[in-house]
Image (cartoon, rainbow, N blue to C red):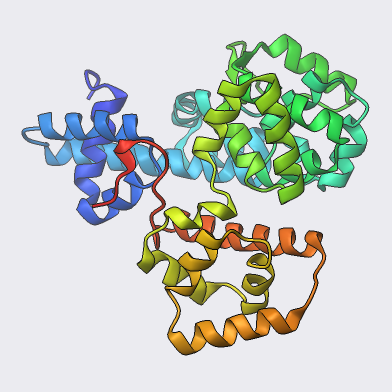
Length: 333
């Protein structure tokens, strides 16, 4: 067991859990990680029963530790684990989670309302705001980014996207400025936050107006970055790229009133994609109701589109639909 790498242990764990559970786990991994684990699994010839038991036990302990940390922080987790596993084993489990525990700055803010956090940081410079938003829940960051002045939104979004790693000293300094206590046991390793995926998650939760303002500004400031972000995002107009079966599934989950509003300013291609996945009677009724609706506020249309996109993203995350994103690797067959 001492000679096994983390990747090898993960491969053995997936073999032990079985194909159905492993397939669900793969849905949450990056393509590169899936390839690496698949290679490791393919290289496993035989797994000793004792090895399986040890790896399962280790996995269970780490899951417990993460659950305790989310409930009450590292100190709470340490206390509970010491009672359950003993002091030495508890520290061993916590040490294995070092990479996870590093990303604990601004933990206090994760339990606060976005408006409260906004009050703390709205007058800070863009880099400081970007740092804080990188460590928050994406839902919180989306709400805060939407509430910032428009001339600041794109700058903050760009800084999040380009952020790589930040030293503990800088993090501690920002926390002191915000007059909050440091997270417990922050290690002296550099911690990674921000990046393309971070800003994509944040932009996925903002309103359409904010999303468009930020992306339009980024296209001027940094066209390549804007294009990379858009490749990883899903916007309402991307419905035309979804297969018919998925569109039918989406229609079942969204409110008719939202769809009618959303289609008021949609392109002919988007309307056609929706109507061809309705029954003839349903599409005729839908068109009649849209005409009867009369003029509507653009804000109401954008809010309806945002709710529909949120539903689509939820269905994708749960694996109920598949969305092909730019590039040949995402072709659905």
